[in-house]
Image (cartoon, rainbow over the protein chains, first blue to last red):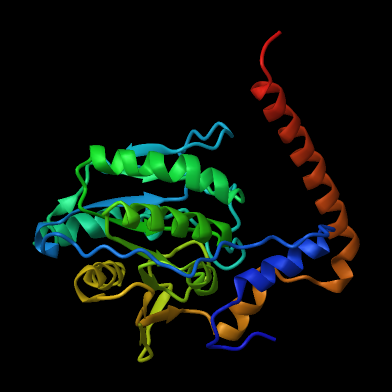
Length: 225
Length: 77
């Protein structure tokens, strides 16, 4: 029985599920003792922020690769069926609920930060940590530099998406790009070790939320450092 | 609320001073936590046969994908 307030242990859930599928070797999740950390070089009000997602393009052809899209006009939909977000509890029909282009644009226009980069980027979710570390994370870094972005906000969907995004965040941070992950799989992200994590304790699939009317205000919050 | 979530997330660029900084959002899901937390990836013992068949099909597809990748990587003769 799940506890009403205890974050889901996604690594345990995934392990049990794959054992039920007949896999005999448990997946080994990424974990690191050292965590890179870059302080922003300029105030938030001057920072250009790039958004990064684990969703795929709407015309996804089945080949997993790093890809980019424009924030203006924003895409109406992205393809998310290939990753294991909580398809019973929520949906991803509202793209803004997992890639917050509109909310970011509004906050930038109000002066909270300098602005969104013209492109957002997609990184494929991979069980292969080697592929993410050796191929995809460097490609994301290259595109972020082309965009002249000062920092990145990364929004994963499924448990392994959270690991992929954590590896990308670590790579960006190592190379001087500060990052914030907005996600819902607390155990995966903290097991990996990342610089900054904004934890939304929702069903997987809507890390920055909101499907309208699907959230309620809570008095509970914590900060852990 | 989405704006507030994004706003709070962005504030971490200014407030976080050390790595491994985690901040939990002030919002919770509309549904009781007992209900939605129990749902994800549950393994029902009565579903054992179906899950095993699902796993077999998944392994078959993975083997095909692996073979295709190996053939693409092999030098042409």
